[in-house]
Amino acid sequence: MMPTIDFWFDFASSYSYPAAMRADALAAAAGVKLNWRPFLLGPIFVAQGWRDSPFNLYPRKGRYMWRDIERICARENLPFKRPDVFPQNSLLAARCALALDAADRSAFARAVFAAEFAKGERIDDPATLAGILAELSLPDSALVRASSDPIKQALRAETDEAQRLELFGAPSFVTQDGELFWGNDRLETAIAWTKAH
Amino acid sequence: MMPTIDFWFDFASSYSYPAAMRADALAAAAGVKLNWRPFLLGPIFVAQGWRDSPFNLYPRKGRYMWRDIERICARENLPFKRPDVFPQNSLLAARCALALDAADRSAFARAVFAAEFAKGERIDDPATLAGILAELSLPDSALVRASSDPIKQALRAETDEAQRLELFGAPSFVTQDGELFWGNDRLETAIAWTKAH
Image (cartoon, each protein chain N blue to C red):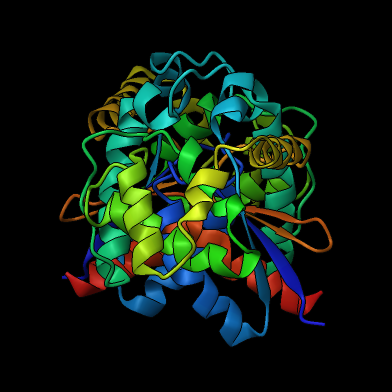
């Protein structure tokens, strides 16, 4: 059995973009399996008293974050285009990801992040998601199932689980022995921890 | 001329401890000079609406931080003992650092951080700082000068400069071309940036 890391991400989260683009290759090279787990940061932020992204509530942090993302993307050779709207509503994309087979989730997620942060597209637009499904030859029924009760409940359960795990940001990495690592720059640390324990 | 990085730190800041212990060796190995610049985060937090450390205001972030610091210290072979009081009042230690010659500042700072985060001592106690000065054979007059008007003004000016630079946390690294990198885990990034630009 390959060791596993839960990779918790929100499609609205800027630092989840470089993490998503790097994660599978790094994990595979280390012989670690990633569980891609979309969740919603919104309810977690609200529980902390934040009604918006901390990057909007604290403009300095926001200016730093955009410059930092720009530098990270340049270093990783990832295209980057700052979206007009931030954060975007990630509800539909997250539901759509959960409506897919687990094996298809990472390719779909990378394409959604690229649409959002490389092309500046709206990911709350069903047309964007339908285009991604078509491009990846994934079943377009996922978009219909995304609005079904079981999928709505599945995303709620995942967000509840994120709350229970005390996640407070994204991306977050949770190892099998229950260690939490927060942030794109902790992906390597989470993998190294998993290999060493 | 060696390229220079401004290393902004607050003696109260937990992540500034591993940064301070690692910084000089990493910078020297890369042929980079570090300017050790103590400042006060308090006024910067207050300007953002925080009357306490965010690690106390947001208990999840706090629990994560302590576990994270523990892991980082274990990895770096740094002793760690969680202090009873957090954050400690760093005013006197910061003034004392500024009262010393710039060349003596890093050794003094490392000893203060070790007293605080490795031994669990109070750094707002003049006796702790006097002991450190004696141990390092530094002039004990620094502690007297720490309460003089020029030094009080010097620390105020540094904290104003930190505000002007839009620092929002510590440690922060500012390169000669004006790039800001925030956090212990960005020390290597700041050094790499400096070498590449």
